[in-house]
Each structure stands twice: as C-alpha cells, then as structure tokens.
Image 1 (cartoon, rainbow, N blue to C red):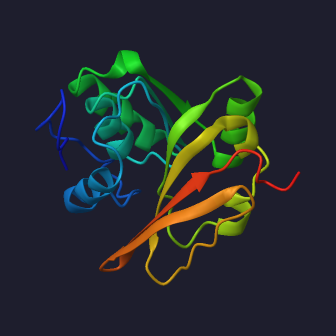
Image 2: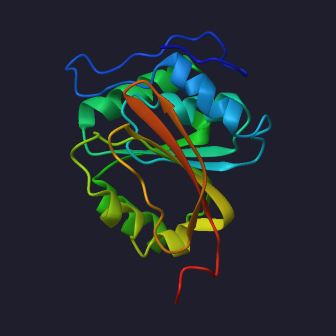
Image 3: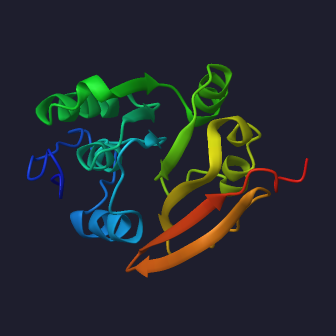
Length: 188
C-alpha cells in the first residue's frame, strides 16, 4: 500500500500485523479518487472504519484540510498514527478509538462537520441499514457531502432517507457505492 498522489505521494503505508484489516488496494483507491474530485482542498474528511487509514491519508495528501480517523481496534489506530507520522500529515488529523455508533454520537455532539466520508467496514459484520439511517448524519454532513462506501459485491446498498445514490461500480469481489447527502430531504 502506498499514497498515490499529492504531497505524500509514494510513501508506503503499513497495515496492522495482526491481519485485522483488509486494506483498500491501490487500484481501488485510485478508482475512488478518480471518481471523486481532482481538488480536495479545504475538505473535512471522516474515515469511519479507518483500518490503516489509507483513504483518509490519501485525501489529506491531495489537499483535504482535516481528517478524522475512527476505528474500534487499537492496533489499527496505532498503524494510522504511524502512517500519518511517516507521511508528515499528523497535524491535520485526529484519531479516535471507538465503535462507529459511539463515534457518530460523539462527533455530532461536538460540532464536527464533514464534506467527505469513507465507509469501509468489515464487509459482513455491519448492518448497512442501521449505519446509513443513523440520525447523527443530519448533524455531521454538509449539503451535498459525499459518502464513499466500499462493500462486498454481493451486498446491494440502498440509500436511507437523506441520501441519494450517485454512482455504483464493481471491482471484482468489491463494490463502490457513492452516496450524496441532500440536506432537507431526510423526511423530518
């Protein structure tokens, strides 16, 4: 794994040695950023199931203003912290060790706002409907914020209220679904 573009281009990223993560491949990561914007300047990013932090670090390398990395596995977050240090991006990041439910409550309760969110949880350990229907998204997302969802190709992601599916692509056993938040359309 490496950083593909930007100020940390070419830097190698490490995954936890315990095999606790399935790192996003460089090819998949490149596809994600080709679909998104060429200019990430000033964006605030949430890497919710951070693993090794590859997606959030790539966003920072490409000009994102800030990234928040969340994972419930301490070994994963140790890798994220080391990868941020190696890429000289630590000053633009916050790292939290907690599960996604607690993280969404904490972040929404402390005024965080995100333009771009990466969701790459363990494929078969997540209830997608529960995750995407969390009420905290209302507080955490700007209008037209983007959620990038990496998931097993056998799973079909249906957007919850407030989200609109804007793209879906398959890459072998993995799929990429991009959702856009439409503030005011969440059916309150």
